[in-house]
Length: 100
Image 1 (tube, rainbow, N blue to C red):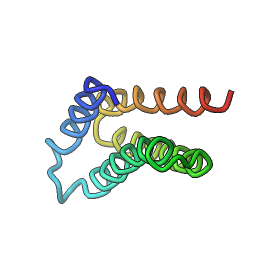
Image 2: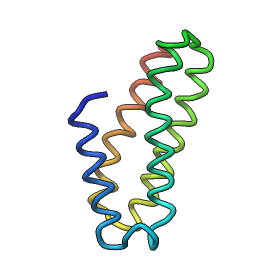
Image 3: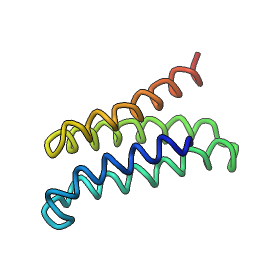
């Protein structure tokens, strides 16, 4: 993953957690953490394990997690939401590209 995208995602998370704190915003940080774990798994499953079928299942779950995270971020910060839309677009393109 591009370092710039990681920075953008970190800034988005900061915009959500800064005004609310970790305890008040329990759902967005949890979804964001799941999103990051699935992001790492996306690279590992197809390229490390050579499992393209499972990689497709994982990326669809990953995409749904990004969508859920984006929705919860929108409730806290519209700016953070738009920053995560970049990642949603990237994963949408990856799904399309791998299935053309």
